Length: 303
Image (cartoon, rainbow, N blue to C red; front, side):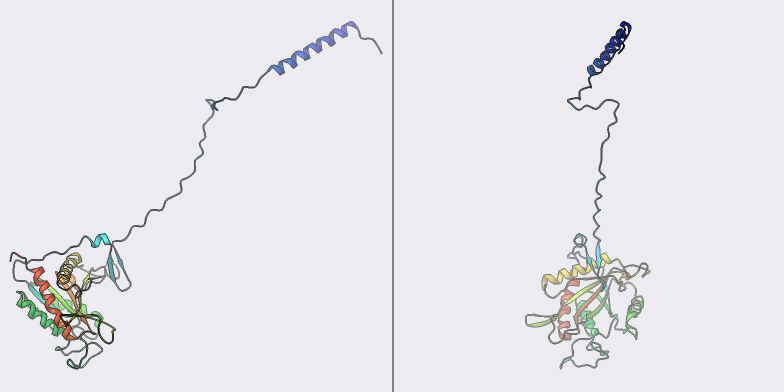
């Protein structure tokens, strides 16, 4: 081997020192220690992870009234609570028109009250149909200070479904009527003793109730004029309350309906006294209670 010269030794030594200096510089460098507080450098954007809120369904508003398939309306409880009995006093002798949209409606056939039926629960014999009850109501109201017109026209015709259009024509024949009373008897499928008859001091009385039409109809715009159903409802409620105070079992709840029943003509009352399962006697016995209630509601105490 060829011996290393002195110059080469110096070069080797110099290179060795240079390499050692480089190595010591690298080992002396230190990384920044992490912050104990976890602070984020000033120029680092802050990212906040958010979660979209779960949508909350809005409560479905409760309608003011519910209408069933038969057209009967149930008012929402808070709406019904807004109605209360009231007086309907007149400053003159009230004029009442009693009429019958269904004049052939009759009562239970009995040995004492036998008549010829035109169909089940109907007769043209005015001694045994609803006209006989209208005659009794006329007399009772006249005794209590009313002026009464009783129109006994039979407007049913061959098409019973259009009877209200003909009874409207009947109503329009008269002027200056304060109260219209369309007198009916309700229908029943009962056989045997009627559950609609109650005994008051052993005397049979047929239950009654009132029907109020709202004019809502089955489609928008069905009627050209709408009734003031709230006023008619208050009137019916006042009568119902007055009768119930005397005989609570005699009067049934008001039936609020979607039809109009010609009640756009003014202050109107559709009264249903008894059913075809009740006797005429029981219906006639109920008439004074209706007459008393009408007197109580329509005559103020100061008159």
